[in-house]
Length: 374
Image (cartoon, rainbow, N blue to C red):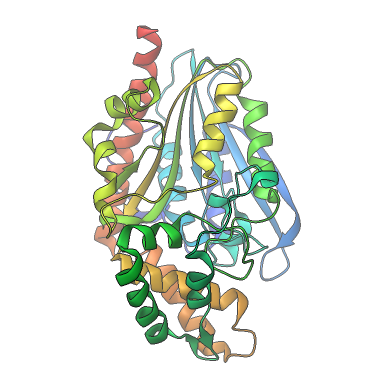
């Protein structure tokens, strides 16, 4: 799909509805096989239906499959969708053994409603666990969630929250505190990072898509596009395979030393012990189908860890506590959340597209070469 950097910023959209129309139109023009999955219960703010859409390019039973997913977290959806659209527009020819699967808006509710969560206040990227064996609370879970839920009619009580987190930082340490905030929790449905009590619609839909499309595949590369972590406009590569495994070594070969440096993008210097990640669930489905895998979450950096935490707090407040607040205030804060994850800055967007083009090209080339080495 991409032979050189795609510099047209027209691939960036301003709404879920516009992005979906662009994706379906360009996928059809590219000759893709398109499937649409209508949400069973949630709707757009105006009552319209919500969909997760897929586009398959290349031979139907390809042994090599490259998967790109966008939309795990609502405001982050635009960036992954722009990269997908640029790939479709570039029309890169595929070999007879290679196919591409684009999964567009895996969490359509979050996108349409400008929320990181699903319709049930569930962080989809913490939902892929065995819910019969959900992780237990730690000694920090209750005090941290109590703090993060502090709010009033004007929004989160930032001063109280930061003061409380500062005290916990002194007693527990930065690594333990960051891990508690980020890893996911399964007991406080109105809190931050709630992973749900059962599989979400988006969880079940993703697994249905992958089970259908990966039959007969032998080598699968998976990228889940996100924003918010890393240096401004630069890619941050997060591989969750164990170090020195074949999967990890392939990720190093494809995406370089950035795989080893992901911990440096966290204020504690350590990557949290994330629970229920979508990328790991997708990997497991591919491996269960008999394929070898190379997988990565790729983030594009926006702002500081502190600013992103504030965006998370506002996002939670908008979903849970803002019902009686002034509409103008809610709209202002919703825009703040959106721009924390999706900057308007044309230089940021151009950087994303240029890096995205190279990452896609390198990943596809590595997938083809992987076949030759097998």
